[in-house]
Each structure stands twice: as structure tokens, then as C-alpha cells.
Amino acid sequence: MPGLRTRFVRDLVEGFERDGRAEAVGEALRRLEPRLSTPGVRSALRAATHADTLDVADAEELVFGLDAAVSDGTGQLLERLATELFARILAQGTMSISGDLMGTVARLQAPLEHLFVGLPIGFDLSKKRDGFVLFLGVGGRPRTARLLRHLTVGAVRAAQRFARQGMTDEVVLASEALGDRVRLEARLGGAAALPQAPTPPPKPPRRTAATNPSRPHLPTTKPTLEAVDRIIRRASVTPPALPRTAPEEIFVPRSRRPAIEPPQESPAPRSDTMPSLSQSGFLSRRDDDDEPSSSSG
Image 1 (cartoon, rainbow, N blue to C red):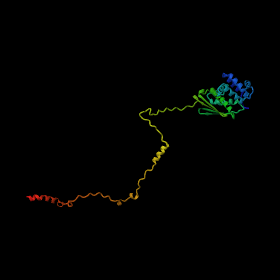
Image 2 (cartoon, rainbow, N blue to C red):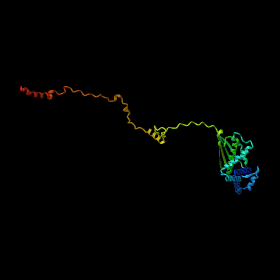
Image 3 (cartoon, rainbow, N blue to C red):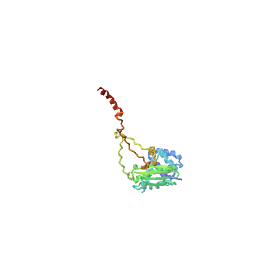
Image 4 (cartoon, rainbow, N blue to C red):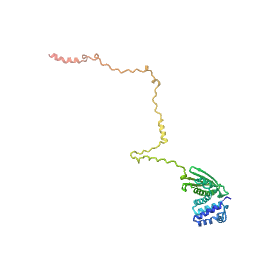
């Protein structure tokens, strides 16, 4: 039967009591005890040894019930208590590596697996450009994965404290439980972060109608596909055909072309063709006028 170390559960319960709500913890234990399959759980916690285990389902019910009764049930208090417990583990041995947070977290695999008896824990740690990602798995037990998530967050924070790599606000932890798997991502900041590229200088502000009232602002619009298509159709319109000339009319020999004669001037009237004065009757009329004068003399 899979279980959780009873001593570890007892340390969590004592941490809830040290938070200043011993009466709330006692009341929650009395309310939760009938739901547990382990009889006399409070007596079992007080007399626990290193080899004792508590059924993992009872441990989950007890820990989550106390977190909801004493705190807001989000697991933040549980993570803080786990940080203190794993800090004790790191302080007892040489598991921490100064300046190497990822290496210290890798050494916490054995303590995490030691807490669960008869329940294999998957542990996969990979490095990223700005930190690392840790995947944990508990086959077919989503609620156990939730508990493992909060315990792992506390373990990573304890490793950060001992590795002295960045302060708390410089290492961002993001964790989530996906079914029976847990994903925890750590992003390192401060001195541990990679050098950032220089920030380019800001671009000068664009001149608009408000900054230059003498020049009106004309809206610029990009040509749409319809406008481009309309321009292409307009350019591809076939011009009207010119009247066609027969080839024989174009290539006519010079000898066969009609001669162009210059315009002739009309000849001046000849003197012999003009009527004489006697013929015109001008002299006869003059003689008639002179006759009376000659007779009177």
C-alpha cells in the first residue's frame, strides 16, 4: 500500500500549529479523523518513527484539510512549511552546491522520492536558456500530484536559499499540476540571467498635422487588391484599330502615280479682243452731239 512518511506528516502538522492556530488545527483533526482509514491518527503522529508510514490517501486528506482550515487552501502555507523542512535536510548534509541552483535541485530528487513509500516518482530536470524545467509524475494519482507540486516548490526555494543564486524576487517559479504530472519552471534573474541585447535608441516622433499645421495631413492608404486589379484592366484595354490600308496602295510605283500639275494662271485679256470704240457706239454718240454746233456756224 503506498504511503507517506509519518514523521514528515507530523512535521507539517506541527508547522500548522506553530502558525498560531493550534486550536484550529485541533478542531480540524477531530473533524477529519472519522474520514481517515487509520485509527487514532493523532496518537500515530505523536509516536511516529523514521520507518512508519501513513496511507497516502489519509495523508492527502489530512494535509489538504488542515491547509483549508488554517489558511486559504491555496497551498501557499503548505509550500512555506515545505521550504523549512527541506532547508533542514539541506543543512544536515553536503547536498547544496554554491552558485548552482539547478545542481542543488537535482540532488533533491532522492529526498523527494524518499518521502513516498511504494510509489515511484518520475523526475526529469532539463536546462533552459534562462533557467530550468522540472517534470514530476505520479502514475494515476492526480491528488498526489497536487501534494507533490507544493512540496517541490518548497524544495526548490530551500535549494535557492542554500545555493545563494539570486534572491527570491529574482528567481521566478511557475508550477502547475496536469493530471498526474507536475511541471515546474524556474527563470533566473539578476546576475544569473543571460546578458540582454542593448536597447536600440527610440525613433524620432513622426510629424503630423498637429505638429505642423501649415502642411495638412493627408491620409495615406495602401492600394487594395481591387484597386490594383482595376489599374491592370485599365492598362490592358486594347486601343481602337486604325483603318487598314491595302498593301498595293502603300507600295505604288512612282511611274504609276498621277502627276500633280501646278495651277495655271488665267491669261490677261488681249487688246484685239476688246471691242473698238466705234463698234461700241461711243464715237457715234459723240458725233451726234457735235452736229448741231457745226450747223449753227
